[in-house]
Image (cartoon, rainbow, N blue to C red; front, side, top):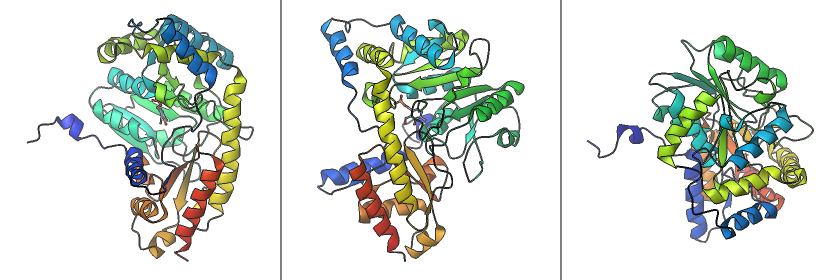
Length: 395
Ligand code: PLP
């Protein structure tokens, strides 16, 4: 018997981190690897945000535990931002701030899920949702999506047998970059409401939408208090703050209270310095986010054109959000390269062409690869050239 718990043994290591780890080792060995594997903006955290953290340190705001769910002024800043962007008036008691959005998601699963409860999401899905559901002993239920846009729909949800406890809507989506329209969000809310299911909208990429597309937060359509709508968001992606580890959950006060009970035993509170930084982020000039967003938009347009010009690599619907391209590798290409799966493709691409990309298998979608364009254009261009040369050997 193993010394380790069945719980931990059942967890799959993060597929995106695995590729990235091997890539980092190759870099350490002096190999010129281009890593487009991670979901991490390449910009420095904007200066006014870092400055707010420095000020917090210098004024001694670091020698106390904060309230479990975060300092009141930060929760007030979140409330103000939500009012401005969605029109919904929250109270700070409907918000809990956590060590990254990832911990919000984890604490939420632990708060809502009983053994066997069904948690439904679109396939492909972000890996951590699946593992977090398993850690809560829930039943992870990925549903097939239309191959074109890979979005969750009421029709797909209708295919699930038995009661659904929670529906996960990630909008915009990791790994596909797809964006749900207002009507699509509304339809999913309607489905959840008519089935008494909770619906979790993970809107962490909400500010990163492109080419004139508009993002609809589920909070623009439904109140959280008295409903089963839950929102997860954070500063990592929009403000280039992944290292600060700061995210939050917005939900009915009763859910937040239960989560806080749990979080009180897990972290006590997110790092105080990061909370002051996040407060500054929410209060920065819109131009700060806009500059980064516009840069991602240019990269999306250039990289999409160049990637899809490579014969055998396809993106059926051009993404409108996040910073990923999820592309299909024609099985004929795999066959010509003597590879059996996209996992093999990822390994060969890293070993031979020195480009690190996670395979679709990690997102429940064999046959696909994910490319993160959170890198400067010159690096992206070099990566595309290498991918093209690698694929063209198959000709
Ligand atoms: N949700 C999605 C869909 C993500 O892609 C990520 C990060 O990769 C997160 C949540 C977690 O973000 P963080 O924990 O950095 O706030």
